[in-house]
Length: 244
Image 1 (cartoon, rainbow, N blue to C red):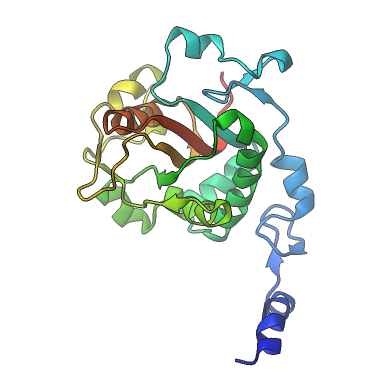
Image 2: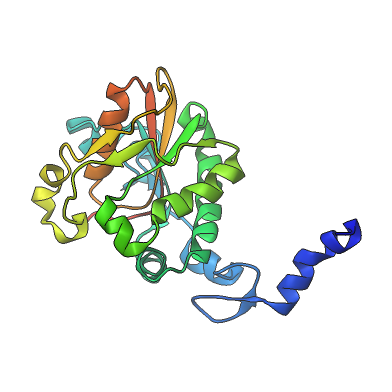
């Protein structure tokens, strides 16, 4: 293919096959247009550096009371925005409706949040891995939305991706359908390191997911990684459910 044609191809494809914003229907280059992104997916909170729950504007450099009282196994969390309307609809479309184009857009928002938090993370993670799905749920859905988000995030940040670092060894009920007081117990012992995984000794590992709600799944995964030698675990999530 001639070099000139190759250089013109992306613009030609965009002109012939423009994207339509999932929220407003306007034409653009991404699944969500810049105007809707600025209106609905811009993080306006000061967040706890550990769990990413909103805190008072002067408290962003220290852990919130909940993380001090019951420290999780993970060390930090980066969230791009709140899990609230209409962003929640986009997450559900990625997770259940196969709108995989949204994964790249979400990864772009998350990349910006990671780079903005860079100095607070004690350097970026050296390795990324997605929250794993169990075999039954993966077969039903056909893809793991966390992995679809992790792939473009890994490429844009230049961080190695280990898509099968972790595996779900117990098919647990979806956390969204479990009472808040039972969620920690629901995921206890549900995850393990996969066979043939790389050494994690002394590494900073980033765990990628679409949404963080109670944090118990990510806490359980961080415990597995820490017991395998990881020195630091950072959660990289597109959306954080506000506390109720």
